[in-house]
Image (tube, rainbow, N blue to C red):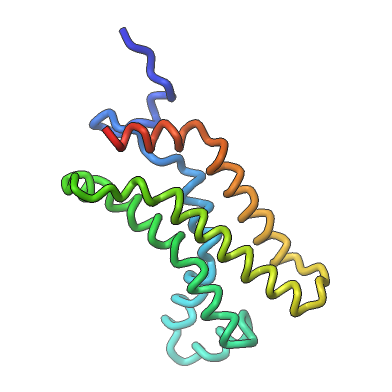
Length: 155
């Protein structure tokens, strides 16, 4: 009887390794700008006031939204993985780590630009973003679960 490399709860009904839950949480946390943007747009009367409260400069809003697009792409790929497996000509799982690294680097550049504009003063929100992005980078690099998942998806 073969031994499974991960606990049984890490597999779906077909025996394919599921993405770890922490990945979903980190993708959501690091694309919080999209969540804020969508909630602000959903409240039609107060859209501009809500956006000005979180993003005093419009350029900051758009740079953060653009920087976090790779996280949204990865989340969409993970959510549609069963449908995408049917199209074997696309090697969509191959681009997921590169997309996550692109999002991490772009977000770090935007946060670094914000810190530089603030003369490197401590800001709790920016510190939390730096920690979250750094932790996501470490987890992507060192996660056995992700390595096994991507290897399983290539089969």
